[in-house]
Image (cartoon, rainbow, N blue to C red; front, side):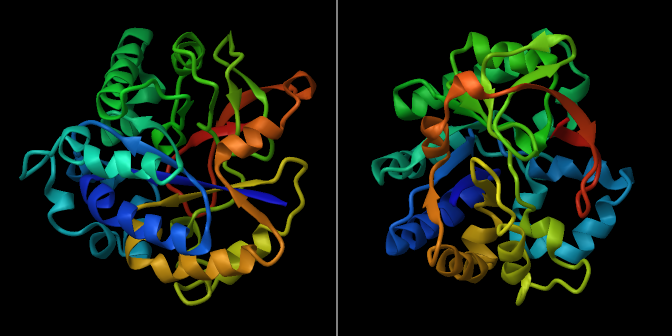
Length: 296
């Protein structure tokens, strides 16, 4: 079965430290992945306004957010100015493409997109996406072909703009199989390839799952057979740093019988004429606070 590795890079530190660690790990196991970058200012500290969201504090406690992200990162945008990731870490991003991995857009400002896009209009959404598109082209010198929304958050304008801006496909939602999306009265012909597996921060600390055994739980979930394989979303700040040993254990287990690949491998394997059009809905997932975009 194909298991595509989708690496979300949320922060400046994750870009500088987590990404090179993952590159070394993937090179050692001869694995190719898709890296989606946050390209604008790192304003991670502003996530503190989520404190009143149901389940947020519980997640912070059980997943040791401070230890994974670091105190300095948690002050960006609040007590410290947020560094512009694309301008300061462009060389690291280019090294990912140079190593043969697929690269694309996660967002411009991660916190602003994740916290606000669901309730913003077309003008706001266009401004944010164009900033990300322009920043990507400044770093790489060519246009991005894949977009994966921060926090699995979007609005109807996101779908319109993905089609207008010429993305080959997007990975903005949680779900079970590739589909053409419908949301808020918009039908888009930009294919969605959803994340199908839970993330480490959704599993650790619940139902007896720890950092020592989470790979076993995730591997068991990946045994669920899907017609087009699985997409696993990992984070440069977690699997690329403190949870790197977990990622290595997963690679070892998956490589015994699965094909590890970039998301574009799944995209190129599809017969687009046979894929359905389905609704996107907003729903909740165990271990994650708030609602997110999901395949209906």
